[in-house]
Length: 508
RNA sequence: GGCCCGUUAGCUCAAUUGGCAGAGCAGCUGACUCUUAAUCAGCAGGUUGAAGGUUCGAUUCCUUCACGGGUCACCA
Image (cartoon, rainbow, N blue to C red):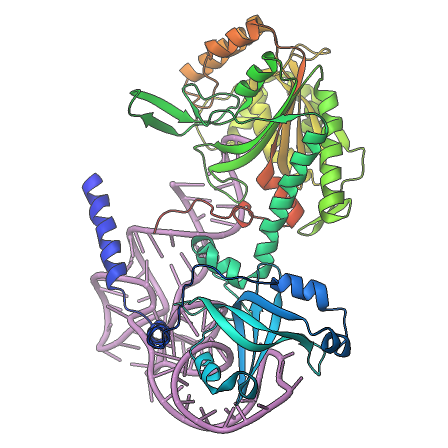
């Protein structure tokens, strides 16, 4: 098995080394050699620029050509060449930075024959810096009239076509750098992601939360019901798990006196890959002492509404065919009521536990025996989730599938937990945290029993966590929000791979 | 993992019933000093994802495999 893999790797490496260059790649290498022979540095150490492309476009677009001529704005601007239009002894080309592009204009009579000839050795994709004066062409396009240019990097491969860009989805993910060069709208998705996360930090920082980092490697994976990745620490000689959630560590911090904490970081779950699941994904978790799940609903509405208003400037998201209104307050529905409403089963049917388990088992294809709680969850996923497009808090979950949540004040079979569903996706999961160490011990034991029966996702017993609770966890509201999915909603992308720069793919 | 779909030039896509694998962009050569999907003339570019099979002949039909997409199942 190992040998087979090794030889396969060697094959691909050899193939890659031997792989023939295309005529276009050879042409580019030849140009590079010619330029080097001319004594031109193609990969300089640094360059003293005066403006970015964005600076020029944002700073001078509003001026007329007359005003620009008067100002005589000298610029030295770097960018990647994305198009070239050669017309005899004049050349127009566009250079781009991550935000926008600007035209440059090179004339033989202006730069001299030498520079002009050198430009024929430039390719689309090269990164150069253009020195010149800003003006507007007859058609009114802001343009840098070049008097010289400097190589910053040579591009040795042809770029994808200029108006279709890179369409091949597999190539876009495997060669994300090319995707980002030629597909400006993809850059915007990741810029949006960055801005969104920055505002999340701002939101919590302003409320007196502190941001913390807790371990990614756990000896007991906890805080969620999921299958972990396993790894090994050589020096300690112990098996470790990549974390499935930071929850138990964050609550230890609340025990320790940090009353408001949050963490934005990666979780790892060893489960299927789909348009809504990447094995590693980014989760925001936050915990606030003296609060319960009702407070967390308020906070969640406030957070997401604030994010939309500040980042997108609207309270309405467009997600595929749907419009999602973030106007507060959002819909709230009890878990069991949602099940009754969307499944079409009569409320009485849900009192028949074996009947429900049988019903749910027929929906699921795997043979793992279902508990009543799991059965309800299966029905929820199958009948309810995808119908909830507008933001909806689904409240009061079965206790069996919520081992870390406090029992409901009204119904001992339920816990104070909600999930926020939007665009048919689960976006957030929160509860009034279970703070009673004895009760927590019991819940863990029930989970361990499920585990014995073959449920790999059940929670392991974490004695150290119970010990932490024994020192006193104040009443606490806690919540996790899937950042990738939130970005999907904000960026109107139906696949999680569109909002993760390097989604996990099978190596080729 | 099951089912469906896709993989053709560097990129985006064609190819009729199984009958010489094409186009646009990009590239190369040349013309052109306000173009902008610049234009014009010419040239080059292919192991049709891989391996097998059927056939006189396979991009096309069949089998297996690889990778990806969609969907279902599990999960956030």
